[in-house]
Image (cartoon, rainbow, N blue to C red):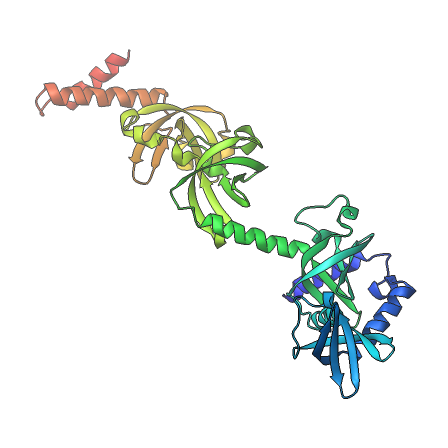
Length: 405
């Protein structure tokens, strides 16, 4: 655990215990007496050897002329004569010590507690900051935020339960042991997630339900404890500005697995990958020098992106917006503007289309200068196919201009 996490945990525990004294002061006089008795028992823990069994009584030799008796219920299974165990000495009855095997086991377990170990703890009480528990004869505390993966509205519902917890702090100076049930549940969830993630393969198709919407995408549950993210850029072939305009919590979707990382902690999903690719139609829809209509969908410092068809955009560079110099794109264009553009080039492999609002002579599309240039070009094309190369160039210009009238 890093220093930052230690400080964070200390702050959380102190906040949980705000207005409540530490566990030592929380204990009643009876609990103080119990702790004192436990220490005494710990000091009197002795190794004994079973020397006889009579009904429910197990007779134990503790040393020369020192014998005791323990109930058969103190053992996990019936002992045999000659077996040795650790016992606590609860007191004397006539000439025999009353022994406890289970108390000795609990004390040994308590003394062997280390941070990170898993223990069973019984919930014995509740305070403003969390739960009070018993680990064998010892006390422990669980902050409310560590009782479950999510928020527990009524901590009293856990009273009397025995929970598997992880020790997250042992503070000898404050005589405090702090445990977390959430840490155990998180480990179980991570194990289940990793197992489920092994069945996923990049390129595979999964079904799931949208559980959360964020500005950057949608989280989708694709299995128990398994959640993936559909980034906004992977929702549709069409541009998506707001996720909640396309997806809602509870929607059932189908998506392609794009990546699986960190044992299933990070799963990337894509919906658009299952849609037809509009770029497959580009060669049939557009060509170089074509005049097309489009809508401005995004402004950048270097130009504007223009949607020519659903899922197909081209870049109108700032130098191609108008004949005059443009300092800021937003001074000339805004999102939603309908514009006429000339397709300068198409890079199908790179999925890029270069656009211009200028004719090849630098004039604005639709202007008289652009029309004149177009008429001259058409005349030259016609002449090259119908007349000898020696045709007078001046007459061609004249013909083009006359055609404009």
